[in-house]
Image (tube, rainbow, N blue to C red; front, side, top):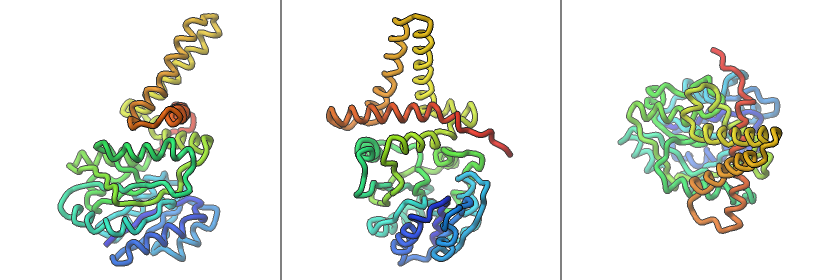
Length: 307
């Protein structure tokens, strides 16, 4: 049996489409859909109550703990963690048969393809689409919780998601799963469509500020995050350039500013190795800079973790 677990907060615009896509793709299988509401102020709860099998509420939990709550109340031996804006497809329905066999034979955490919708933005085409294309060329370190599939026993033997993390719970969980002998696997053919990709630099900046919050919840987590260290180093060079400029050291300020500028250039080249063309590379450089600035400022939005 499949248990699909969906954390939700003010998702009334899209959650019905998500649930409908799940029902259609799992129509040949025994399944349940569990929505864990984080205290929505719109009609999310009412819609989920009508369309899903179980609705739970916790207004205070971080997103990882919302998923833990769903898992603890699930009946299925296979858990599917899915975001409220991620749609299943017919390709997914076809591929899940192979995934079931894989889960029965191996200890593995499986992730699917979070594809961009047909109405994708310029930002999606300059950042997310190349990022997705690059993903399949590398051995994954973790599977995102936008769409994650694994056996129930593996989830609990790995300790579940860290309830104190405000973000980054997916990479933290996969690290723990690998610690108990699990493999991490992306299956491109396990296709879903993510409707939540940002369409403007402002939305992208806010999204990455949120995504980076978990990296600053402890020194250990920060040092383990290459992106956090990289982005913070860039910010320090920016600060040094400004300080030297105020002190009248224009030469040193210029050198520091050039050092800061090298970080988004290096990130763009190392992360997006596929040919992008001159225009595409310049657009990617801009987005890489916005990404690193957002990640470097994520610590401003972190609240102290409490037990």
